[in-house]
Length: 367
View 1: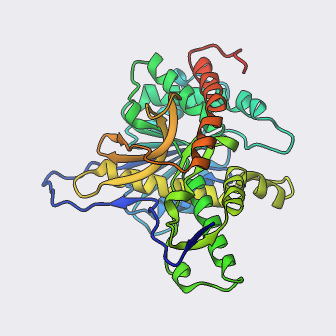
View 2: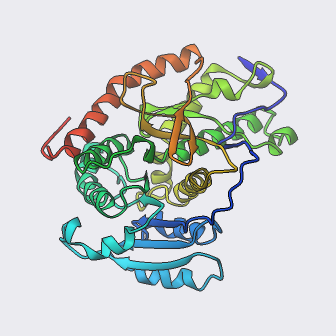
């Protein structure tokens, strides 16, 4: 049983202000959203249009993209926005529209692909989305080789290794500038913990909980049992009374939170609004870090890592002007968390290998 009266939790993002300054004018910031017309892409594009850091917002998708851009252009905010419909069956090297969308991009967000639907295995999902992501990353290698690439398309556990191998083939891979967005896992774990804290008090709102942002670090991967929320770090011994059974249930709920949304939408959709919000948090924090000078940003991300035996791993990372500049130590885990971490290893390794093989050109690879 873990009991508490106070909440002192790790934040999703941590800023440390410095006194560095520069007289050089800032470079224009261009964000390209690939998959901008979809259920995640449209709300994410709206949030980005409102961000004063962004000078140019480039939207790219199969259909309806100019319409989305026209709609957003009526908002009197700083960013200039344009939308491009992707041509069909055009290799990246011949795709002038993709070139226009990506050229001079500071940050590229890859959303393109299909969401997981009821009855669809992760292998099915991979087989559809891998080719899409591979093509778009190849475009990044050609037209914006120095941009930071944030990957949202699932399965993230395989897509980030795939993207890394594509960039290596083009000789432009920089491990500091490729990351899978796992912020939604952080958001879910934090929201579920907050709800549990309130429920403990006989269902009555706890003022101390209501007034504090509860943020839980989440490590591992971005699907199922590879997701490991570190509730032990979010709850001190003096904190709210939550049993081991409740913490286990919260972990499982975080791991399979996406299924909860698919069920609630009766199979007609998946997480879109919450994913758009989470992706935007990641984008906003990353842009602050890339701008340099005044901010140090720490957030969870799925990146190439040496923390564990798995070549890619999600954990708190320090972001800076070069992207992911430091992967922070894991620190001490509870016995329960250590067991989950050990059990996820073979699953995550297989998913990583699947992405690597596809990225190297072995498109017939199977788990």
